[in-house]
Image 1 (cartoon, rainbow, N blue to C red):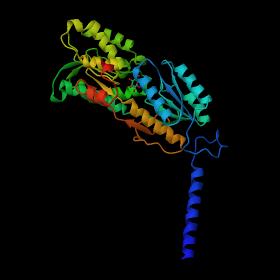
Image 2: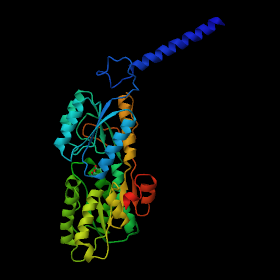
Image 3: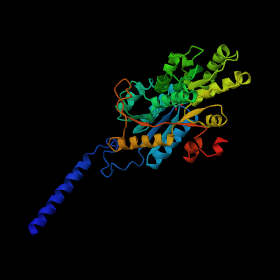
Image 4: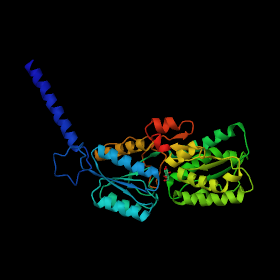
Length: 374
Ligand code: BGC
């Protein structure tokens, strides 16, 4: 009996020491800088610095993204260096350089131009600083470990389907006049949004149920530099005066996001509203407050709601996994090739909001208060 107990004890001791040995080998991103501290547990992230590079403060969404990321990373114990780059690529590059040299272990980057970070991210790679592409894919750099975003193609299909159902296109209704506007050609997302929407709408253009009077249908012509409201408005001023000033009705505008939708609305208010009886169905994305107000006022039909709280949550999970030497949860390993291979991605699900459901989606979820939308 005694022998048996001794045997069991011996096995327990062996299993315990084996487990401890395995634990010691768990990779930690702190190796190198903290190698001397044998007390540092892999779970201890206190003070680990994370750089968060956002494109601009001009659009509401990026302010929310930045705030959410900072709040959630700090709650998880990280120290955060949050920077905005005024939509200027050189500024973003130098902010990233500073983040690398000041000891950030992980960089979360919403790029201004997907193709412009290759060189600076070489430096990150040399220093074993990991990179997460946030919302926008960083192209042609093998320094990117993960991509956290919304399903960008689905954003586009939801916009296209909204127009399809509001105009009754599946029932053969038409012809209707439509115009198209999308985002910055340097933003990989813009092609996904536009492509997703056109995969729904193209067949109706081909069969004549939808007519694009301006003739402007290809991505490059419909693109908007810097996603700027002013650029969108200028383009639409020209489209309206050339094609709709004789009283022709415009029935729908596919706009890829809220900043471009706002340019369209501004243009219609100036050049269309007084001498036309209808107001077109206009799509959007982000549910920015001024656009939701327009939605309530009937000036924008819908917007895609991307809950930036969820995106931040998923990104923090990725940061945590990297720091703790684990695999991050991803749900897409086939869609996003950045030119160096597929980047494992987590795609959050977008939903549409319009005047019929915005209270539930935006207010009851705690995203906005009633007062925010007055
Ligand atoms: C984002 C959109 C945003 C646009 C302009 C895109 O990359 O996914 O949500 O409206 O950039 O900032």
